[in-house]
Length: 162
Image (cartoon, helix red, strand yellow):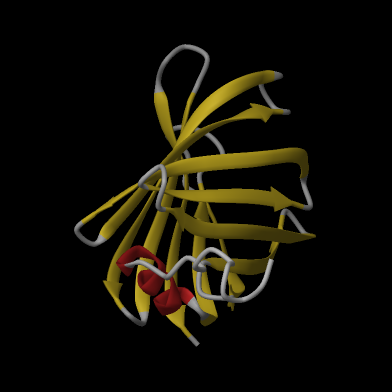
């Protein structure tokens, strides 16, 4: 196949251009809700996000949780064929790959997925929302649907560009 016969390369969409706003270093104020009705555990984190070409971001999230280092990594992109944002998450505390997908409405990206919970020994549905306050501030929340059907807030991360 020559350059003249090769199919055209995909072009970034408006959704891909939104991802560029994520790139950079972020300071994160974290709240982890360990038990319903109890005050959250609070800590600070850093997240570094890089663009991979024009279609994807890759991030590295670092903090400490319960006195131990906690490292997570995420991918985020947009699939034009499905019309959805897609994301993955792995971290140093769980031997589980989390996969999410969803849509952005206005300034809020909502992703949904399922993952195996080591705490409940079952597959749980979860939902994340990320509200973009500005190019330099965003708020991320994660919710899980427990085996009894109740949705619980698991965390809130308040991001500010470093």
